[in-house]
Image (cartoon, rainbow, N blue to C red; front, top):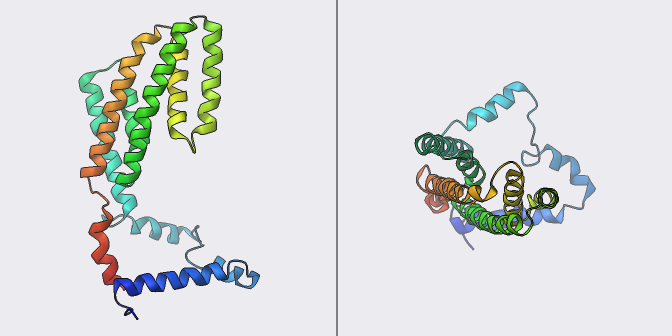
Amino acid sequence: MAAANTPVGCVTDNLSTLEAQIASAHNPDTGSERRDSALYDRSPSSLLEAWKRVRLNFTLGSPTFRHALRLTTALVVGYGLLQWLDPQQGFWILLTTLFVCRPNFATTRRFLSQRILGTVLGLIAGWASISLFPQPLIQSMIAVAAGVSFFANREKHYVVATASITLLVLCSFNQVGDGFDLIWPRLFDTLIGSLIAGLAVFFILPDWQGRRLYREAARC
């Protein structure tokens, strides 16, 4: 049997605790105990307790604090590039960085690839729409449908949501200008914003789980 102060012992203890919680999930007698547990209690009971919880995150050991520094740095870099390059629609660099940069590398990489793929699909669909249907009324209907699709898919289908909002932007912009002039700037700004987010999460205080393995083992 594994010793309690070893990583295997920690895993065994965690699985045993999880099994006990699952077994008592349908027991109404344990409801009050679960509500009093720290795992269930999500809201502070006073301003002092709220401040203590905030203060605990003012350290590099906090994933929330590291992500805040990482995201802030990425947005500053994006804003600097926006001022230097002076692109036509440069705010997309900042928006892409904000939406793509996530607390860990795996999630950021997933959203990064989905953002780029969705943007490309949306640009293709937008180019086809404004080419085949130059009538403003039809383009307005397409924009409305794209907006509905965006709100319907933004939580679970990020590729579809990104493609929809890109299609909406192209069709809407084409009502007051030349939508074709928006295709390449939108693509390049998305790529730049994604690159900034990817580099930030890779180099700025990265959250590699393997680096914290010895700490988790030491806690047992």
